[in-house]
Image (cartoon, rainbow, N blue to C red; front, side, top):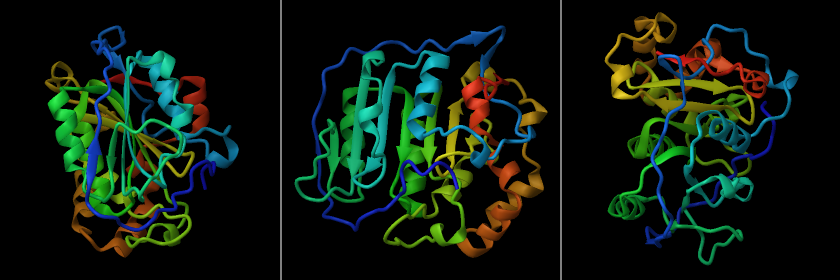
Length: 290
C-alpha cells in the first residue's frame, strides 16, 4: 500500500445542482521547459521501481509540486469530491497565477475552509465545465481525485485532459489499489479506491497524444502529460509503445471488473509504467518526451 495520506472514503449522491463562481486571476502563457530538442518527461517504464514501502513518503500534492518545480507550471485546477482531494490547503498558491478547485458530490453547506470555485451538489459536473469554458481558462497542472465509480473517473480524466495545455500534466489519484477489496466498482464505506485504476488505464493505453507513468506511492499517482502537436507528429520512441496484444487484451475486459483486476494484478508494473517515489524525489523520474 502507498503512503496512506488520503484514503478515499466517499459519501453518497446528492441532488444534481452546481453553483459556479468566477475568480479574477491573471492568466499567463505556458512555457514548456525544454532540454535539448525534447520536452523533459519520464523515466522508461522498464526501470525496476522501488516499492513504496522502501521509498520515502510522497503524497499526491508533493508530486504536483515536483511537476511545478520541474516544468514551471503555474495554472492549477483540482477536480475532487468532498471526500477526496483533502489536501488543497497544501497547494503552494504563491507560485501560481491561477488556482481553481472544482468539487462535486457535496453535502449541503459543505466547507473545509478552502476556496471552492465550482461547487456541484451531485455527481454531474457539466455546469462547472460550462462555466470554465465560458471563462476561457486553460490549465497546465491538474489534480484529478474523482469519485471512484468508473463513469465519473473516466469522465473527470477525459475532461481534465481536454482542458490541459500541450506539455501540461495531470496527476490522477488512486491508480494502484493495494488489493481487490478496495477496487470494487460499487461504493464501499471506508477506504475505497474503486475502479479509477481501470478508467485511468482505459484512457491512457494506446494513445499517441499523451505519455504517462504511475508513481508507486499514496495509493498510486498517475502522471499524464499531453504531447504537443510538433512532438506528436514524430513516431514515438519504442520505450513508449505498449505491445498491441496487451492493449487489446485489456480492452476486451470491458466492465468485467473481476477479470480486469486479475490481469492487472499480474501485469501491474508494465501496465502502469510503475516508478518508485525515490525516482521522483531524486529527479530521475523525468525523461525526454518523444
